[in-house]
Length: 108
Image 1 (tube, rainbow, N blue to C red):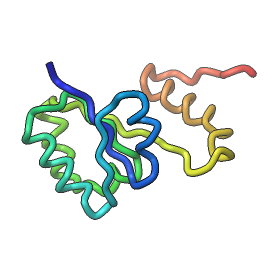
Image 2 (cartoon, one colour):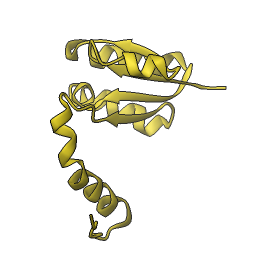
Image 3 (cartoon, rainbow, N blue to C red):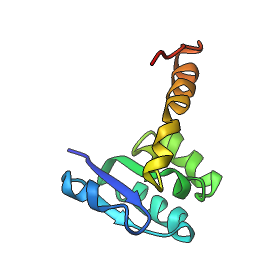
């Protein structure tokens, strides 16, 4: 059975570890090499990677992994501060619009 790994920057891995996930902490300069290595190992079926780390991955490597199909790479937005979480509703609305192709109005 394929496993799940969460890749974050230093200091953000604790909650994922407490939830029982395998984690790896890296900086943005290591993102391409790390993701490439993980995809070649074949151990993981899902790679959750901090969004800003994923943005640092070279496009050709990201595209090769996407075409291969496994592992599935899921960028995660991890807020830097508690206050940053307040604007997440707009992000959710954009995800819904992109997924179903229709703007949904979210009511409070």
